[in-house]
Image (cartoon, rainbow, N blue to C red; front, top):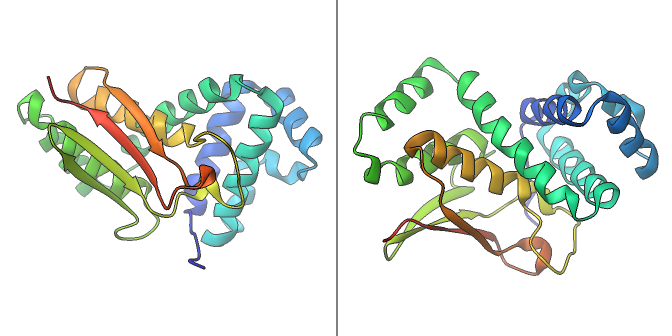
Length: 201
């Protein structure tokens, strides 16, 4: 079994963004209902974890949110994903910010793929974990590890945070909204998580 990693700093940022989005008291209620430690109220708590522990915490917390909010969890987690993209770019290295700047100099039609490749580098815990492929006129983002899905089993895809990240990344790059579909999810029996982005005419 492949060990799944997730950067502890990314987990800390996720919790900080979540708490700001739903409020301290609601976040605490989520933890209480799911039996998770109140230590999880503090974003800095996750910085002491290793990448494997952070990945498991990421999956457990999203599972708790899906149980607490039901169908409403999808919209919440997508909004958090959108905000995490902005935070990821703002807190990135000078080199990464330079790459982001170059993307905006390209013709708009050429920007989606390099912007998704930038996203893959920012959120992937290891080289090659997340890749971007051309699919006829469209694009396919493949997440081979997907920490969201650790020990999760659902009938439908659950990678809503990643969905929000992709959506916001593309809007940041082009100013346009694209049709996105998670067509395969490890939690729903897929070998990997796959997101199809419709970019063709």
